[in-house]
Amino acid sequence: MENILKLINEKKFIEAKERLEKENVVDIASFLEGIDKESVVKTFRVLPKDMAADVFAYLDHEERMHIINSITDSEISNIINDLYIDDTVDFLEELPANVVKKVLKNTDETKRKIINNFLNYPDSSAGSIMTIEYADLKQSMTVSDAINHIKKTGIDKETINTCYVIDNNRVLLGIISLRKLILSSNDILIEDLMKKEFISVNTLDDQENIAHLFKKYDLLSIPVTDNEKRLVGIITIDDIVDIIDQENTEDFQIMAGMEPNEEEYLKTSVWDLAKHRILWLLVLMISATFTGNIIRHFEDVLSSVVILASFIPMLMDTGGNAGSQSSTLVIRGLALGEIKLSDGFKVMFKEFRVSLLTGSILAIVNFIRIYFFEKVSFLISLTVCISLFFTVIVAKLVGGILPIIAKKLKLDPAIMASPLITTIVDAIALTLFFSLSVVLLNLPV
Image 1: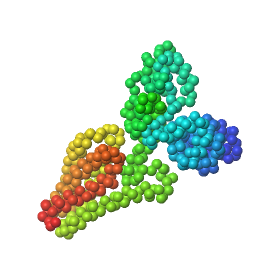
Image 2: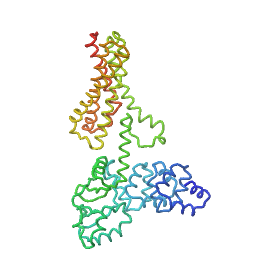
Image 3: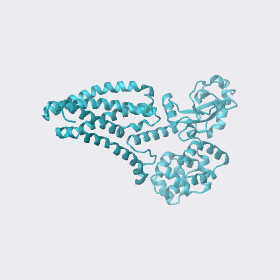
Image 4: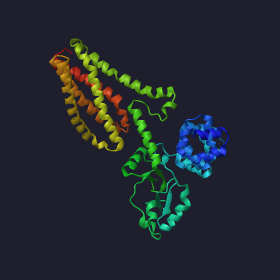
C-alpha cells in the first residue's frame, strides 16, 4: 500500500489503479485511516468505481465525512448509488442534517425515497438496520425458473444464499437455500421445496433481541416483515456483528460508570471524555457519603477500639469484589439470554450457596491471619471474620439480584455493575461490622 501511495504521489494513476484492484477492500480502508487527509482523497479518487463504494463502507465516520466534503457531487452520487441500502442508512444516520441533504441531493430518486423510509424507523429497530437487497421468489416457480430469476437479479443483492418465497401481496410464505435449489430437479415447484417454518422479525423489534436470535439459531440472515407479515427486508450477519460490538462496548462503558460513547478513544476530545464520565462520578461520590455517615454514627465504637478501623478497607474491598463477581456473571447471562427475568430466585439461591462457601473460606483464612499471625485478640478477630462472612453473603446476593431488577425496570443491567454495587455493599458492610462489634465486644453505641 505504501508503494501504491508513492505511485499516486508521482501521478502514475493508471499503474496505481491496477495495483489497487488487486488489494482487499478492507485492507485499503484500514490503510486510508492511517494516512494524512490529503492522501486519503487522492487514493480514494484513484480507486476503480466498483471498489470505491465497498471501501467507503469500511471507513470510519471521520474519514467518510472528510471524503464527502472533499469530492464532487457526481462522485458522491456514484458512491451512494453503489452502496447497499443498509450501509447507506447507517452512514446517513451519523451525518449532520446539512450533509445529509447534500448526499440525498446526489442520490437517484428511487433510492432517495427508499432511504427516507428507512430513516423514519426508530433507532435500534430492525427496520433501521435491514436491507432491501434480497432474492425473492414466487411459490409457483419451478427450480429452473427460480435459478434463472436469481441469475438475472442476483447481481445487485447483498446475499443470495437464502431466498424468500412471497405471494402476490409480498406476504412471506417460506424460505429456501440456494444450495437446495441447485441440488434439486429443475421441474420441481418452489412451494414443494420451501421451508414453511422459519424465524422472522418485525420492523420494530429491538436490534439486541435480533442479535440473540442470530446466536441462538446460528443464522446468516433473517427476514423482516411488517404487521401484515409482508416481507420488507432482511438483516444480514455483517450488520449483527456490528450491533454485538456496539452493545458490548456500551455495556463495558456503563459497567465502568460512564455514559455510552461510540467514538473511538483516541479520536474523542478530552472534553467529551470528561463529559461522559463526570455524571456517574458525581453520583458515586455523593452516594459514598452514606458510608461516611455510617462511620460518623459509630464514632464511639471506633474510639473505644481503635484497631477496628484498620479492618474497614479489607471488609469494604472484599465486599465490593464479591458483589462485582456476581453482577458480572449475571449481566453476561442476561445479555446472552442464559438468565431470564423469571430466574431471580434461582440466581439468589445459587449465589447464596456460593457465598456460604466463599465466605466461610475467606473468614477462616482471615481468622488464622489476624489471630495467630497478627496477635489480635480472639473477640476482635472473631468479630472481623463474622462480619466478613456476612458481608460476602450480602454482597453476592445484592450483586446477583440488582441486574435482574434493573432489567425488569426496563433499565440496562450494566448500570448495576461494580461502581454502584460497590457503593451499596460498602454501606451494608460497615453497618454489619459496627453492629456486630457493638454486640460481641459490648461497646457503646
